[in-house]
Amino acid sequence: MASLNAKPGTVDEYLAKVPEKTRAALEKLRLAIRAAAPQAEEIISYQIPTYKYFGPLVHFVARKDYCSFIVTSRPVLETFKSELKPSDVSGTTIHFPPENPLPAALVRKIVKARIAENEKNKTSKKGKTK
Image (cartoon, rainbow, N blue to C red):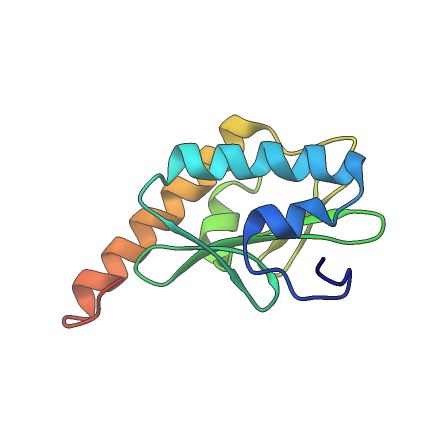
């Protein structure tokens, strides 16, 4: 049996270590990300769930009292500023309590905007790949 302190190798292993109420919120977030970006690679990077598509796309993380959805793009977050008003946004990260998860429709829009941004950056940096 793996140690509770062992680093997760998969998103499933990561989520298995998260308290139930937080896990439910992050599983909803994961489903919305995967629905918007089925082509994205799902990995653990920096010990947190990460989605890659022509570079980093988005990440999420569980904290003691909140969850974070890391978008990695200030311009994308700026685009959705009005829809994010009830959320705590810091830099490129959206923080939310597990009992009030981000709306799946908003997550899908943000992820699709990140896909478009990464695809645009890929074409302007010829020779780069997934």
